[in-house]
Image (cartoon, rainbow, N blue to C red):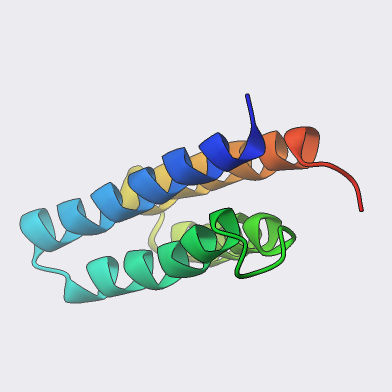
Length: 99
């Protein structure tokens, strides 16, 4: 699988997760933060930002959600987002070309 497909799938999962947070819990912050993380990833796929950003963003999301999981001890949504972010990060590390 080409690394850009992995980025698009991750973007879709981020935005859907943000929408779910808005619809189920009324959390505007969930939607805003998911879109804020998705925008640079979309810019990477169109070549506006360097590909390394596609590895940094899932790493940042994983750290943020790991801290949130440790604080709340609730698997949803932090634990699920952490797992998805780590899978995306590993897949990108494997599939992206080395500079």
